Image (cartoon, one colour):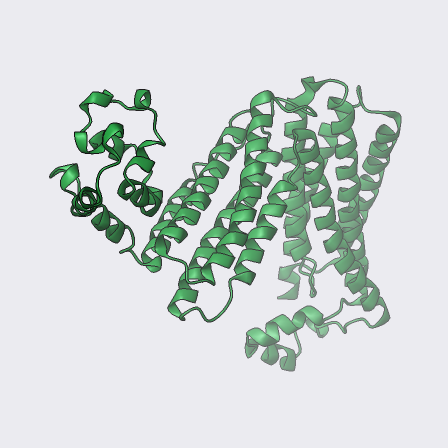
Length: 450
């Protein structure tokens, strides 16, 4: 009897209790050879040949099972087990599940995630990477479905044991998601793909934790409200994760295209400002002798934060507009350089995957150039200051030169069109750098302003 009891699935205790109380109907579900103990060793009271006992004996046997006397002193009565399983509240279950999810997220949120490795494949991922990405996407799809069921279950008067079962399922899927991510970044995923996976996996885990917190808040309000918005965030995060590129080639191209769009946003903003300044230029703020007008100095000294941000709406002076246009022209060249870099990765690795180290170095140079282009854009807000512009353009030009030099090293395997584009970018870069230097030479220094 002890052996039979230990083989029961405790998630179906109520159903199993019915089988136990039914006597012979329970034993018919098991073959004698499947039992760990010999059939003859079973108590006579539940031997298959004695299942058709009298009504009084069946009633007595039911009472014994309810009291737990047939299980011995080491096993509690079945009724007590059922009562204990239902004693936890839904709030307790949600609190435990949230703690488990936060523990799973700990490593993903930590600094231990390292993905600065060179990929081991290009168009066709390695077998380990392919398997990890397959499991990761399957886990994301399962989390998507479980979030839907969780939102529906939370609106009903579900018992804690039912919520526990679904929450355990969600935790298991999140654990698989994190494990497959760890395998992917350690088995051939290059930095662009690893970065994308890291961002999207964190978004899914955050969304699931927020869904559980929303369920806790819903329970605290007595069920007033809905989990649809929180579930929708989980759906969107899972969908975004499943759209991540499935190989290193597409991940590199995705990174270069994203940087190009980022710079385009900066270029468009300042081109509009230059055009508006040519039509309605700002009056110079400096009076004769290099001194600011007294009313202007007073305004700057008493300026609060709101007034400061309002200065972003100011236009350039006519002189500043010319210099800003030259700098914006250099930023435009960065987009063309990134386009050349994207073509270079295609020509370098689509034919052979032996250039992965060169592509990885190109990626890092492009990343540095884009970050410095963003910093240079911050220096372009009026009024322009010579010191900031010189520092920003020096760093930026240095890294852009490094990017173009790295591309020039690929001339041996570049196609005819990308090679012509690269030469044109280098010529325009030298021309526009001379324009920027000429403008900066005409700007007054800080000592002159004093």
